[in-house]
Image (cartoon, rainbow, N blue to C red; front, side, top):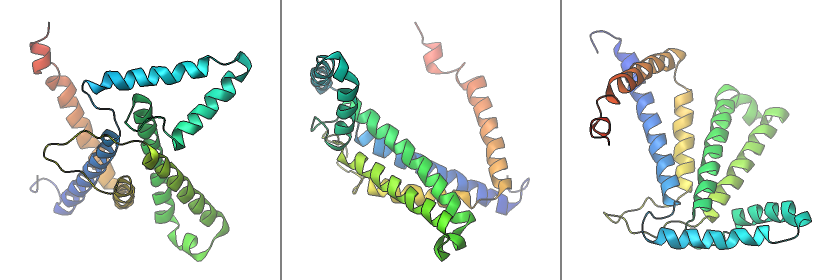
Length: 213
């Protein structure tokens, strides 16, 4: 590849690939930490969820929308269970995706108009502060959700979640935004080639396809 392409472009391309991979790993670690265990205790969690749902449906018809909304808001700050459930896992997944989107917008603002933001421009500074408040609030919602108590092999857990996810994603996204348009174009081309190979050859020759029913 160094014979065919400029070495600087290859370095930028590898840096972009590494930053994106680190971001995906950080996102996955956060989401998996708050998912229910895939073992026998899953049935107990499912039964616990079904016990909570009839309480919403059992009230008068007039109070159903209000009760449903209040239960949703209450579950964001005060989860009904100390163990992860399917509902809490979905909350973390949605909140984490929202945090990533907000961090992308904040990074774009800081990269494009950093001087205006730090100099006190009313519009941009207000937007940046609102984004920081939203990111903080959504992160607190994630932090309030119950984490999985399942032991890991080897016994190691990433500490300080979701703070590590927040800082790592912000740094990675901000560095990726600074990449040139040419680097992103090259990355898109290589990704298209990779997807074409994977979907065109990999799926048709996979073990699951060959050993199917």
